[in-house]
Image 1 (cartoon, rainbow, N blue to C red):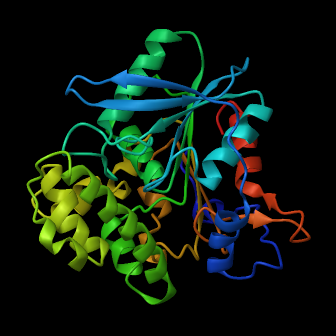
Image 2 (cartoon, rainbow, N blue to C red; image 1 turned 45 degrees about the vertical axis):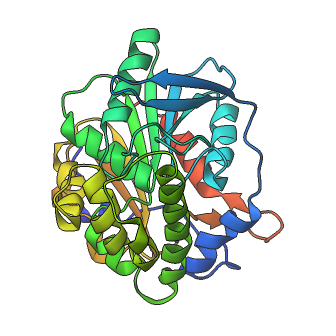
Length: 326
């Protein structure tokens, strides 16, 4: 389905009056949604290159199977992951979370790890699940970085028949614009927090493996552009940061998506600028883009009172997956 401009602006989300700004929307759930994940079963999948990915399986349900892709430095411990796994389970869906390499609590074995455009491990998981459950409906949700990975995979595989439908949330459609946005204003706090974790991960890996990077300059990498130029790009075979951002960004892949796909995004997302949001003309025939004026980054908190917040994303994703074509 090709969307018209007005359809792309028509989100039903109504932000909580007590969270009026993008940063409050972004931070509220991160700070206060301290929900335990449902009981999980860990499965390790060995990869052809000698590395591994870990899967976290929620309890079996009779409905379709949903792959959940987390954001940068995320895991099942991320507030949105734990909450969404419970909500989808309550909707009768079984969830399996793909921990990107090195994000499951144990360092991966190779110098490389994961990045915003790495779709190979997702493809491996999709093929594995299709072989195991050939007649079961398979769905996917990607959040932030995970949403970029999901949309890129869908655009790379326009004729795919493995996933029935998909949802992507708060996607950094253009990585260069996201990196520049995170260097400005209050958004620098998000950048600083994430880069501290990324640098710590590099140091932990360097204690075990020889890495083709200069560790003595690690503390000087205080922006995503610098980190991605000196760390992400060389570890993953890119010719510098601009080559990485160009090849890994999902925006150029959207036109190829034929799978029914819902994108949920807020114009005030503090992780990126509004000009990174794709236009209706850039969307493939399977894509539905729902934009809201407010919502922050993976926020979308509604509800009348602070002590009874509603996490609208969970509601909308459950609703979407209950429809045959989103």
